[in-house]
Length: 116
Length: 115
Image 1 (tube, rainbow over the protein chains, first blue to last red):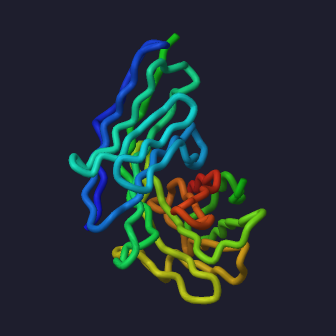
Image 2: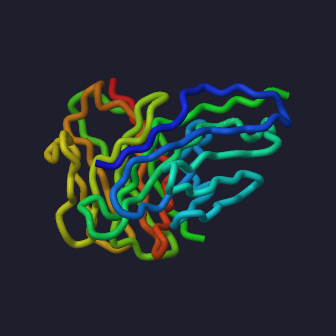
């Protein structure tokens, strides 16, 4: 079946530091890949997505590139802010034709804390 | 953009009672909605897929009779936790597929505490 593995957290950084959160996946076919962010007590917000190999998703200074050869979708940001403190989830949506079509599979989430 | 409204945002109920959680798509029609459960500091676990006008599809291990899902219209899906017990306490989140390219919008979640 499909699965998503994220790097273990929590991640603690100082403001303006470089951020990388690793994400690798296992899936059949051609999944779409997502990063979601969750602030305390809230639902999930889409941060960025990529629907095919070599696509780069970007938003609010965050980037992730769909690497089919390494089955990865690592999240990066060059300079984090205190306001980026949240939980980040990597997810995939299976491609058409399988029983999991349209369902999101989430990684375990990575807690990010940014200090001033 | 597409908005999914989820209510209530939090609820406390006594053991043995039932609780209904609503998920509404405000500016689009959602033929498919998804219900997730999230334990503290853990990932989201898909409970069921709700399809307008038909029975929900439950994931393996999820009790259909305990977690009743109704999707009677294109803008409303409800999750009813029946005969709630403390172990049902959790954060429940709904989402809707918003169209092409696998767009999904999430509700703000419901914190259920059963005492």
